[in-house]
Amino acid sequence: MHPAQATNPIIRWEYLVDEWDQISEALVQHLRLTVVSVALGVVLATGLSAVALRFRWAATPITTTTAVIYTIPSVALFGILVPYTGLSMWTAVIPLVGYTLLVLVTNFVAGFRAVPAAVRDAADGMGMSRVRRTLGVDLPIAAPYLIAGLRIATVSTVGLVTVAAVVGQGGLGRLVLDGLRRSFWTPMVVGSSLSILLALGLDLVIHLVGRWLTPWARRRAT
Amino acid sequence: MASAIRLVGVTKRYDDRSPPAVRSLDLEVEDGELVALIGPSGCGKTTTLRMINRLVEPTDGRIEVAGVDVRSVDATQLRRGIGYVIQQAGLFPHRTVAQNIAVVPRALRWDRARIAARVEELADLVGLERSLLARYPDELSGGQQQRVGVARALAADPPVLLMDEPFGAVDPIVRARLQGELSDLQRRLHKTIVLVTHDLDEAVRLADRVAVMSLGGVVEQYASPDEVLRAPANEFVEEFVGADRGMKRLRLHTVGELPFLQGPVVDEATTPAEALATLDRLGSDWLGVTRDGTFAGWVHRTSIGEAPLSRLQLHIPAAQVTPDSTLHSAVELIMSSDTSVAVIDDGGRFGGVVTLEHVRGALARGRGR
Figure 1 (cartoon, chains in turn yellow, cyan):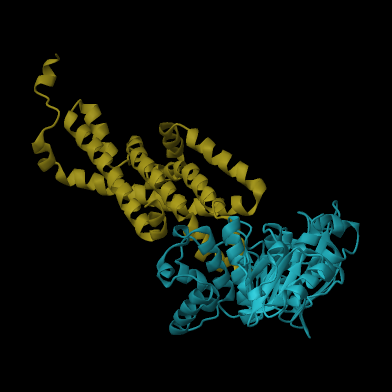
Figure 2 (spheres, chains in turn cyan, red; figure 1 turned 180 degrees about the horizontal axis):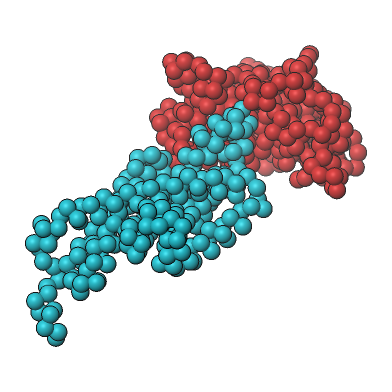
């Protein structure tokens, strides 16, 4: 066994106390990057899904493009942007938004396509305007799909944010990177654990809000 | 009577390459009338229906509802005044039953109390337990969902109802019950109803008039169900209504419509000799006996001797019908009993008899409803 590791336990609890300011700052930044990226992703995905649903021919190019973006290695994508956006938040946010699109657009489109034709027909036949139908009928029925997409996008974004540490952002990823550089386990463990907890926490919150928003879906399950 | 719905030269062409779905169609539906559009699939009956509330815009022609050109009215306004019922019910899964029924009243901005009262009234009207009002549609059976669909269509009390295969998605037993309920409802409400169906029995059972359509939205015959069955206008209609159209007509007529027929039935005071003479005259082996105007039973001619008829052991009648029975059930009874006649029980009194020859003769005379 390497002698250094003997004096290098998995976690040094005093680190949590000494570096608490740094840890909490990293956590807040992580959360902020996640929320901003997913929120922008939702806005963009909503527009793209609307186009994909409105124009059938547009659906395939849109999903293909978002899939291609998804396949680009994240480290490379963060790196590519540095010359343009420097080490600002946008260098992290732009790729993170890009990665949410595939999941969000796929789920949004599936959600709206899942609205039964008979329901749409009945809504139209009762004299609902297009806007009323979209917001009052299509949207709630698609909601479980939208929420499912949002959960996946959020969890995967929390994970990806750590990678953005390579461009000086990355929230909890900075702790991990720091630990890696110094062969110091504690920050790596703390950064990773908090990242996992953040992902699970956000997932749970969205799940609960979703349940609260769609009481009918719950009743059906029982 | 005034025409509630009038289609004049209506054509619908979905694209330029294929022939029109509906070509130059003329159709009038009178106020309070239930008209069934029937025909093979693809004959344009649903397209025709959907043009009335502008879910499909006609390529050419004119459609009037209550004398107003539907194209002169905003489509959403028009639709709120026309009830619409479809095959899968199309209930909103995210709304409770009560909220589903209240869709149009809410769009019309009724106040809460009025909507709540109307929803309960409709639940009673369509035979839906009030306890179901707080449920979601997915918790209801198919038949219950269809009742909600009808209640929803009736919510704002529209004078016109469009129904597209309303009972097509429920099992035959529930369908028969729902048809009966619609029939009762219509007797009370007198809506103008256009009903699309591919089920001839449904059309015959419910409609005042039937429009038999062939491919391209051509109306081959537009007449009462009885006339369509009795005298198909052409080969297409004859083939469509099928070989058993005579049997189908039996359901359209009741025993009460038949002319009175005494049959081999006498009062118990009649002498045995006169009774035997009656049997000889009618060529019958069985004699019916009435007591105080009520049918008492049958006796075979071999049992008739010297004793008065009132002393004889009578067979309790098996085949008994009422004036409200359909000829179909009368024939059914005759076929499955051992006498060749059915006795009409008119509120406890002997109301004559029904024989197969009697039924055939009445239908051949073409008595309408």
